[in-house]
Length: 308
Image (cartoon, rainbow, N blue to C red):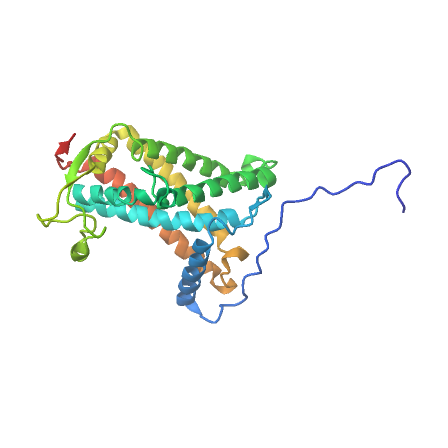
């Protein structure tokens, strides 16, 4: 039947841009079993890290909701989270010098901020790239939620990632105000490794400070005492615990959605095992974060000598 006279033909509303990755390989990719799952997971996560921000397809004349923006930035943020929680966990076990030395490690590379062109930069290039990855992840996730999930009811589960993500964003804001940009930070003296890492002490768990008296003392932020001040407060511990549990749920749900995505290129026979590996890693991350909070709450604090 032809068009009715005087009536404009209806046009379908364009949907969100399609992701342009090739389908994930069928089968096991030639490497069967759990070993294959680990190999393909590691290989493809490294690829995601190398293409985190600038090759996602989102920044093309206008802001798009291409899924690569959330996938690649999530891989980078998860990798940083693993490194961060490992440092926090070791600092908790080894005491003030290790915790404060880790903080000074990032302070002493602040000159790299702004590609080394900005004098007295408050952030290192690592922190700047991390901030860009977080901005990309949040903005693309909000755009996708608006385009895809906004018309669904809460009980459908389509809002789970959005609501948990906003909770995590709130938590990050609180955490940065509590630690990184705290106005209550004290200072102490430390012998930092001349080459950033205390290589002779690595095997004994001493990574970010030296014991050699010939190495000069340096004034550093007393992150250990600041953490003790925070986590001796029961209300703060409960707030951090609730937000960390929400973060755990966000990782579990997000990882289950990420693994079968074409962008990650996990062979289909390995999807189940890679999903389980990610859930185990997420649970380990959360367990270490929670142990830092509650160990600090219950353990007797170590006195740190502060300086002006």
